[in-house]
Image (cartoon, rainbow, N blue to C red):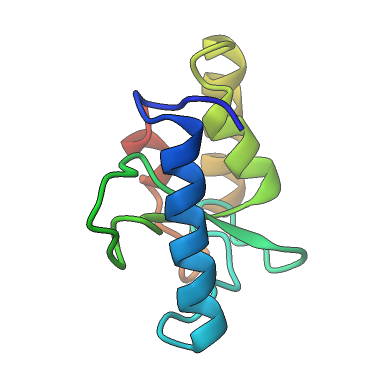
Amino acid sequence: MNSYNGFTPSQRVKAQNWLNRQWASGALVRPRKCSACGQTNGPIDAHAEDYSEPFASGKTDQFHLCRKCHMQVHRRFTNPQAWLRYKALVKQSVSGLDGIEQDILDRLG
């Protein structure tokens, strides 16, 4: 795991471990649908922009994303043109679908 948004790998692991414990105990429900594209197959990850403590629902699991969307989010700084194309493709694909946050990818940059 690499540094991200100024947070060290160890801080990111600590946040993920907290989240895994919340899911395992039932304190938080693991997401089952990507908030960006609507995918329900495969694992849905929690993405955070802020890995600081105290960890909290809505902060440590701010964005619920399928693996494809999650990886695109993490690569948005290294390949900005691909990120813009991906955002446009997702926006076009999900227009009118229930349970999709139309602006979620825009909020990420």
